[in-house]
Image (tube, rainbow, N blue to C red; front, side):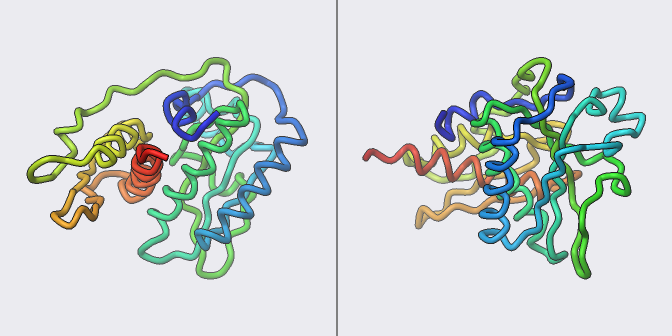
Length: 219
């Protein structure tokens, strides 16, 4: 499965089977986390046993209480942390999708029960539920490209493909509060329009955009 395929097939899943993740897949996930932590200067952590991470009433109603495993998104607390968590966390989510597993970004969870190591100067930003879904999730209602693009004149093909993939990015409560700006020199800016976890969302959006734009170039 390619990254583009993973983007198209991946949807948030909130109900999971009572099935543990195989040891070989756990090893692959941890190896990928080690790689992404170095690249993004993060402290992402994979908990094979989610335990009581999702024991809050909201999680139980939503179904996340059934998630067997969880990723704690931790890093040095600075102004770039949330975007880095979104960007590299989504790279991990797509990798996990390629392994045949399902995921859900979850901002509501029991931080005391997740069991993450949070060092001095670090912050636990968000969690990602992981497991075998009872279903594959459903596509979210999406804005049109025109609703998120700011550009003058003709737009290059790579930019349009990047936007197409960005619109498939998961965002908190499906808010999609971002603008993708194409500048005259063909550089691209990602503008945060506010909202809950909007900086994490922006990192996820940028990850999707870059994959779409890169894969659109002819070989």
